[in-house]
Image 1 (cartoon, rainbow, N blue to C red):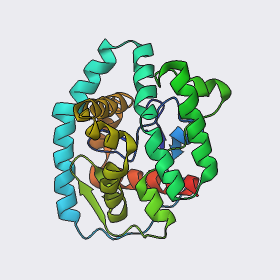
Image 2: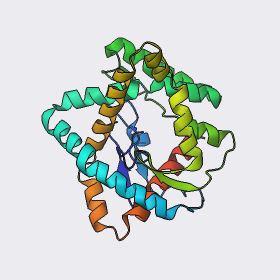
Image 3: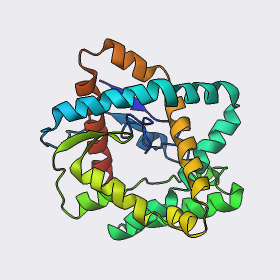
Image 4: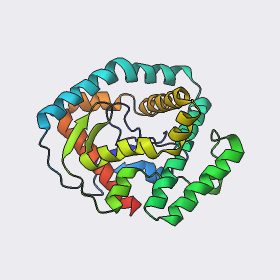
Length: 248
């Protein structure tokens, strides 16, 4: 059984390469939600007609990870104290909460909206998102995204594709990622107030923080797997299936 543990930040997931694996999990997401067994749920069935293109894009993502994200994550982990990393994980998750709540409303999941609103409210007053005050009450964020919204509305996964930066995904979730950029309240506010570069910086820091949580794991997978493309794609598919199941 392959166990993926994301104890630090959920989204992105694996930096440029495996967004779906460690999609921005942070301490404000429960340990149960952040620890996914790939044996627990069956992945959705969808075709892979772009196998050649997807393999080329995964090689590009490997290159970007090797020469950009992994070195940055290694330096970040070596140079920043644990309490700083915890604060970064909390804050990069905190700024996603309005986006989660938008999708909670679109899916009419009022209980999840209320839980995310509570986490945001408590964490705002206990440390502007840097301190996970809600965790002291054993209340944690419930991640959500527009791909899940499309799934809730009945959209099937469509064909599979690997994209630069996004990694392995399906057509539905690729569309969801694009729409998510448009409907994210934090991004809208940042662009409207000309703080887009601050938003980009926080997003980039989230990627680096997320990647620092599994240094060595991706390298071992690439070295030991007969076909890293198939292995990574399978892990991402299983992780996504578990997220969709948990969101039902």
